[in-house]
Image (cartoon, rainbow, N blue to C red; front, side):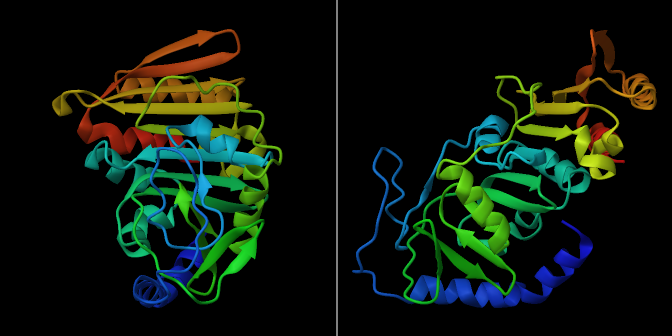
Length: 286
């Protein structure tokens, strides 16, 4: 997402807020709605049409909802640590959910993901279901109801909610309804993490470290004791010599271990709270 999109969003955020107020007040609460079955009580959403119902516990779940052309994605638990949230907001690609989360919904965004594909993007927002009465214009697609959010964006409710342009959200819905999902991501492990970031070097110069590798994966966890900082691991498959050199510099500067196993270079270790922003910025920047 570029600065122009952010400037447009700032201009329509007041429209979005007014729209949200209308949604919360309007509509016939007795209208028939389609709700998913199961243990997750999403029936408090009062919107007609299908709701997204997908696991959202980490980056693997996100990539299963993402188009096969995906070149970068991240997932963050916004409840894990305010320090991690602040560092992520500074170092990660821009996210409307992280910047304007309190204005997008009537409940807090608890977990967020951002995915880049086909020159566009979509965000995934995990929020607590809230009553929604709506009897106005929506944009139906594959039995999902895309609710206009301002003039440029739409929202599809569920677990998680989808947020983005009409075109990008349609591409995600295509995957959710059975289309091919993201491929080429092999470094992601099964461990739980509060922050996960993955990228393919094929995405080009807009990727972390300008895409100088075949694949990249980073995970960070808040330590049980907040004073202990964050446990961080970053892996690079087939990194270019310039990337390997920069990783060595970052590891030496921040007292992280540096290792090579086959074609994978890894740096890992404990990062102090006050250093997290700088480390993430170094690893996720150009």
